[in-house]
Length: 384
Image 1 (cartoon, one colour):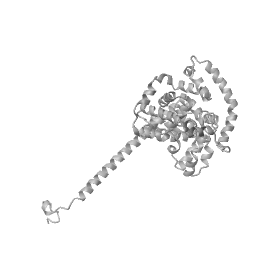
Image 2 (tube, rainbow, N blue to C red):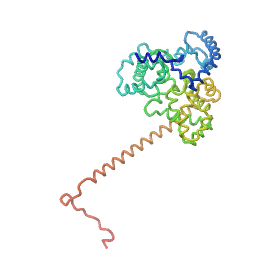
Image 3 (cartoon, rainbow, N blue to C red):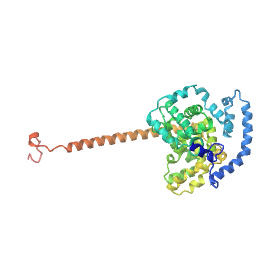
Image 4 (cartoon, one colour):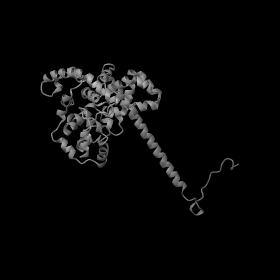
């Protein structure tokens, strides 16, 4: 059809994304960095394959000592082995139940959730060859619907479409992408990013603010000066695990570590982005300028190796400290929600009282026929 003809006529990169037009500054920068990184990538591939040959059983990366695996994954997984590694470190083989994906897909899903999913299909990586075709969007639809049936507390939330799209690109299999999504949400413990109220997301934005003050104080001060809330900048980063914000290869590098080291990687990378964009942040000068430039900061991170260095080497972060800060933030958010509910109840009560008063005032005035005189106690003045 026309979609297929257009897809074939355009030039795409090795990952399936449309190549930017000649002269595009960011596109040229990405190409130049990819060429520079080739020799380093080749050396890393040799080391990776040497380690792979030593696995106790094919594809079982959990048998590698944790410290060695962490170091290996931070260097990046070669594209041809990425699906295998992610499947292993996420524990998909243990969670995977043969035939269950089809069962979840066959279950009836409520029309509202179906409509929400349908609305986002065309918005998901529109510059990727796979999702420009009806067949690719059909795969995306299927995985999102199956996940909604599997996870009724979440159903569907914007952001999951980009995560699922990227998993489909890597795994090239609906079923494997589904189980990877299920396992990743569980392993990262981020259900609260997508459930009603997004309580965990709001708490984590407070936590990010706390650590930004410690690790990148100049950026934090600039945001405070212009009354910029991190929620307005970083919520997209967190709910898509950077899939919509960073250049594609940078996202892959981040996910290589995220799926093994856990949710703290989101904080590391967020601060890494701010650290590398610090000069631009300090040049903003106003709230509007910050908000206009904020989306460009992660998109410019084509130098994925430098981003990972800034995130992991320059910004040490302890999981224990993060968890403690998150618990405190969750308490504050829950208190805010409770206070909000109290205000709503109070406002509803006041509206109800006003409605009752209005109804009474609209009654006809009393007449002699429907009023009985009442005795009044004489005042001190009249009794004299």
